[in-house]
Length: 411
Image 1 (tube, rainbow, N blue to C red):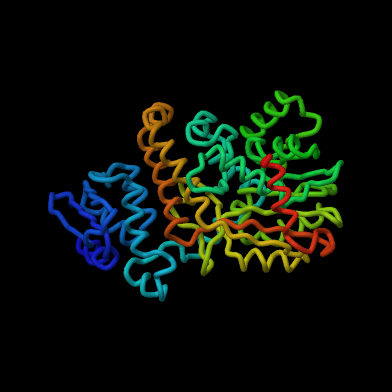
Image 2: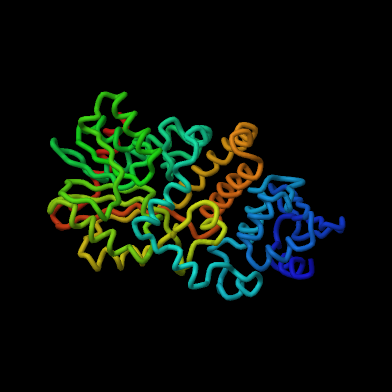
């Protein structure tokens, strides 16, 4: 416990953390703060504290999954939130000072190589996460199965309303205001956005995915809605796409591309986009320095995943002559989204454990809790980036976005 004790005396200054080691000895960190409850944990073996100090995400994540880190007061989110709140990204100052307190993971060549997502690996990585039981996703997502950041016009809105508003926000930025438009959605999920775009605007939509399970559901939904001739879905890699499209939209897919393929991705998008076309990219983004995804997330949740910085995206789009016409940073929205997902997951604990096992449940809970704090306390944000090939393709002010969004919401 010596290394852990030394590190956490520096890490936890506000709020209270109580730690009981495997021998029953109790350690206390921080001080009371109004509105923050005491968080208490217990370690069941000698080595877990050292593992957490040497590799925080992997050490803590695996310890929680295996039952070697037990929450005695508060849930796993309360623990992660306390640690990250004491080291909020805006307040960290010199990054080197934090890294001297706890050695941060991921600064290795292997971390970058794991994001080299050639076509076969990309399909395998997608299957790892998105081909899980459909029932699992039904338990925590909204009714439309939108598995990406919602848009909260009011933080008190329901998840369902926020996801409807997200679709309206994206559709408005695509400027779908003339008949006969052909839309390509790269990474179509279970088909919700494609069906929404067609329903609201009449545009024909082709959604592509690498998930066989998502493809089945998306096609079933289009058939059930009687629009399978207008809203189509295919199992195909973006690199294999041909043709021309008036609009391209990609939501929550770019995080799976990998930095070694950024220029390739945007070059293909530019080739697919009509001369007067519009593209909207919605992606998680990282503020600050570039770094590989933490090893726990890569190992258990998103193999091959990588969160880009805004500068990385800009370099790639500039290299292929895509013109950036709008940039929006969604700062709190994914945090609110993940909070809803986490609470729904926790409410369905018994069912998820019955579907899989307790270790899987704790893995999923840790994933959602850690992601949530990343948006409220860490480096994570969401970017919505709009591109054109021709600078005259859009009006010279943003007024059309608000006007279209209002119309789509029926306000």
